[in-house]
Image (cartoon, rainbow, N blue to C red; front, side):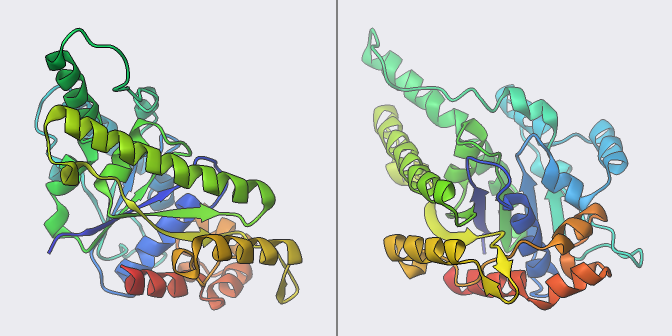
Length: 312
C-alpha cells in the first residue's frame, strides 16, 4: 500500500511548521508503529538539524549527498535513486538507541538557488508545438518530488514534507506530490488574513497545473495539487490555564469560515519546553527538563496525530 503524503506549508516563518512535521512524524513512528519518511525541502535545513547534528549532516552530505544532489540528478536527466539518499533512523535518543521506523531525506542550503525558479505557461507562442513544449516543461519542473517519492512509497506508511516559507517551486513540487496539505498558523489577525490568501494561491497553482496538463495533452488527474487537509493552530498563548481571548476568538473565526472539519480540534501552545527539547534534537516526550515534561503532559502532538489518523 502506497504511503499517505502530507505537506506542511505556510508562506511565513515562525509558525511551528517544522516543529509540527517533526513531532507528528516522531509520534507516528514511535508510538503508532507507522513507517515514516520525513523530507526536508526547506533550505534553512531546520528539520534536518532537529534530526541530526550539523557534524553528522556534514559527513553524510560529503559522503552521500542531500535532496539538492537528488534534484541536480533529476535536472540532468539521471535516475534520482531516492533509496540511496534515505538517512535511516537519524534521531539518536538519550540512551544511545536510534528512533525507530523514522527515516529522513536531508536538505541543504544549496537548494535555495533552485527554489525561486517558478516558471510560467502564460504568454504568446509562435506555434502550438512551442506551447505544448513549454507546458511539458512546466509540469516537469513540478514533478521532481512525485518521482522521488514514487521510488520509495511502498516502504512507508506516511511521508511528511517540511516546506520552505513560500509558495515557490519546491513548495509547488510538494503540493503536487502530496495528498493533502496542513497549514500551521498562529491564530492572530495577520495570520488569519494570510491564511485565506494562502489557500487561494494554492488553488491557483492547481488551476495552472490543470491548464498545463491540457496544453501538454496529458490527463489532468495525474497533475493535481494536494487538497487542504486542515489548519493546525500553533503557539496559542495561554494565561494560566486559559487561552487568551484574542487567540480563542480568531480560532473560532477561522473554524466558522472554513468549517470545523478543516481545522484541528487540538492546538499547540507557546511553551518553552519545545525549544529546550529542540536544542537536544529530541521530541518533547524524550527530553527530561521540567519544562519539557510539562509540555509533554499536555499531549498536544499525540492528540494531533490521533486526528490525522482519523482524517486521512
